[in-house]
Image 1: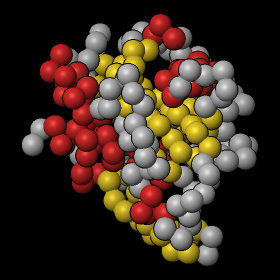
Image 2: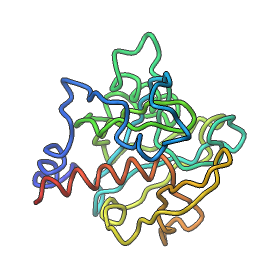
Image 3: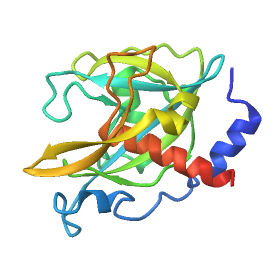
Length: 210
């Protein structure tokens, strides 16, 4: 089962084309003022935003192993650093998805890029949106991924399901995005960089329908 043709057209028109990865320090850099300085050198990273068509379009996400040094236990997309052997963000995102959840290269069709995102932990992330075949069965790498789950895209795109919350970081008070708990996965806290990536997808898709 594939994404409906009209939904696919809307989605692709909202994304940066695959032939050129987007430039820029990060669309959310203003949110990190005083936490990440504009001149800081960032590590290049990429994540895969996998969409699976079932009775509706689902977004596949992971919960990281609690023992990981960075972002342990947090909900995320498959991804990581862009290695020297990677041929750009798409190559890196697909490699990481294969390593983390067993996604074969032939089971994912990259559709385009979202805007780069900066993180407080020193990464410039380029999200790659991809359609994944419905027959794919995740095989989590236990050292990295504790769980793989899905949330409907329509639920994630609904403005009422996303809120800004205040947290303390490095002695400063800042706002981060967080989704309210999805009824089908009530224990999963979708927040921080993952929520910001989904917010960016929502905003770009809304721009194509104005």
